[in-house]
Image (cartoon, rainbow, N blue to C red):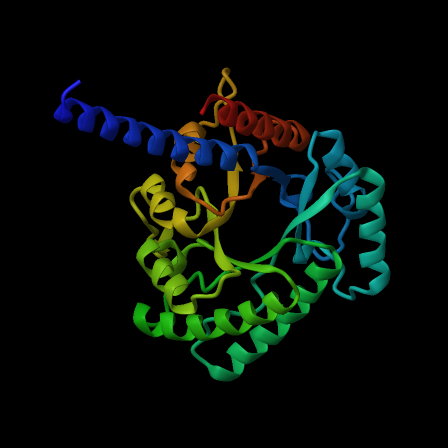
Length: 306
């Protein structure tokens, strides 16, 4: 073997090793993904009201386990308005009995971390600090929040206020051992460039993104959408730590009809901190339990294939 052949062979071998190493890291990351159930899949009433169509809040962990879930998400508006330690103890007892663990506490809708009004912004931070405490009591790994669904001020101005609010809440979440995840939840947050600037502006180790497959309305009246949800998830993937795997209808092969799950999860191979895949079934053509189960099965099949 001459010198040139040796060098070329060595170089190719090195590339092969590097590629194999990257593949193994991606494969390991995919195998470590935990599938959680979001309560809206089963419970579609809020603040402790009884859902006449399905499961009561404190039965939720047992039902989730019966559907094959080891992790559950929580949503603040499913809990009673007069939330007490007794309620939290009841939920922790129910989770322990069922053999499930908490993943993400979903919050929002009662204040805006990026509000232009300083008083309102401080009040929102105060409200969501309380829910960080609740999430910690339930042993969640992260808390999700949103930063304004309706466009009311210029994007750079909103970015300034959101950076301030998210930083304040992120620092508090860190003190409780929690990640703070901002979801693309329409409005400013459905602009990937805006979200990336927010992440870079906050620049906290425990702050990242919860990527939603379908929340891409940039503006309303009339609705204007970010044109490519797959590109959106690709751009956000370096910051994604959890996802909302939305589902509504399935074809005869078990594929979700509006989102190509295999394509999405292939993109998410490039999300190094991605841990929780949250099932969020919101359809009505089949039972809620069946929809949640079919979504979980689809995710498991896709992960095995890729």
